[in-house]
Image (cartoon, rainbow, N blue to C red):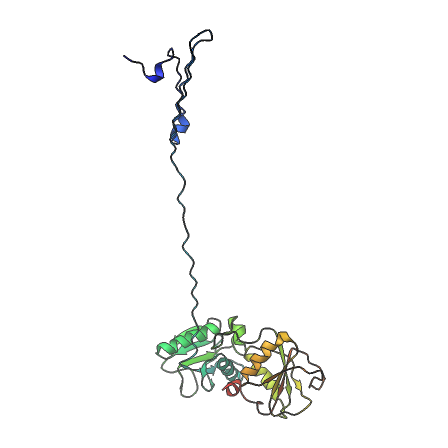
Amino acid sequence: MHASPLEICDNRCVISRIGPALLAGSLLVVAACGGSDGDSSATTTTTAAVEVTASTAAPVTTAAPVTTTTVALVVEGATVVVANGNIVGGSAGRMTDALGLEGFTTGEAVNGTEKVDDSVVYHVADPTAEAVAGSLATMLGGVSVEALPEAPPIEGEFTGDVLLLLGNLQADKSIAELSGVSATADGTDAAGTGSTVVVANGSGISGSAGRMSTLIEAAGFTVGTPTNSTAQATESVVYYASDAAKADADALAAAMGGLTVLALPDDVPTDAGSLDGDILLVLGSNEADKTLADLAG
């Protein structure tokens, strides 16, 4: 019988099996053969190595892509009526002006038949009215949206599509303040990015600068203390004190129907001869005591 290759060389063969490597999918076999030191014959050494390796790497997992969806606000297609449901007189009218600047179609402000802390937005049974109501609620900071009840909580007859019962928590606050982000109908940001507007009365109508300050503040602008102009004016003019304030000056001018915008002159047209702010609105008689909705329309 012939000897196997591993049994030759005077039977001095060593087979080494590495147990742990076998568990990992590897087998190492070594055969070593050789003669005695005094043997004159050739010495033969044979080494055989066989290695089998199995891959145990974990599969690569790829995360699903993140999809971000932005839902556009719906401000057109339904008439919004604001009802005063709070203790602040005139707040429904001022909110009506603010909503008009945001692109909503608004009706005449009315009084509510109940007082509430948090505003509620009601809508008629119409998909567009419901969409407008949802957008309005979002812009007010996420107030409740409900179907309009058979007896709306207002004085008189309801003639709109969406009813905002304005509560104490939202009364006389700007849209930007309530929502954190103000979006106009054309998708641009509303003004009020930090410039302070000072209204100077050039109309000759007592108190009109203060009343206009209240209106533009409700629309999202930052206002300073009203003052008087050094001259009477028919048309209002918006002045900006620095290039950084020009964008807000342009926005204010547009909100008031497209007023002239100029750089502030060295001779500031106020009683004090100075401007404690960034933008000066010299209020003329044509714009005095009008709502922003009237001026923008």
